[in-house]
Length: 76
Image 1 (cartoon, rainbow, N blue to C red):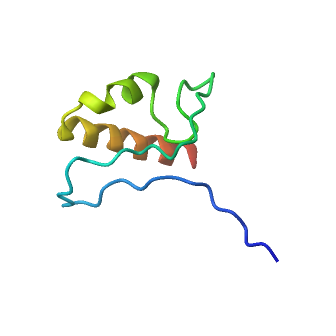
Image 2 (cartoon, rainbow, N blue to C red):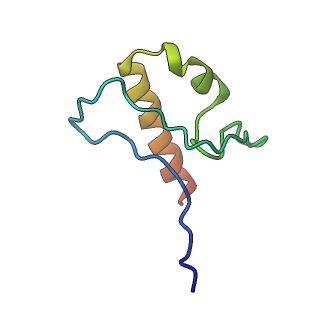
């Protein structure tokens, strides 16, 4: 019997995690939802995806916080 598959998603850095650079939320499922404007894989906007490589760690953590908010809003 095949186990039920879970959605693939990256987890945000844990509070106090000092790993640098802040890891990307990308899970290599790159499709932009036309309605929300968000990637269905990582929940980032095109601007957030495009800017990621040049963002400071503080800005990356802000993106992660928005991703968590988006996930929670979608679960309601």
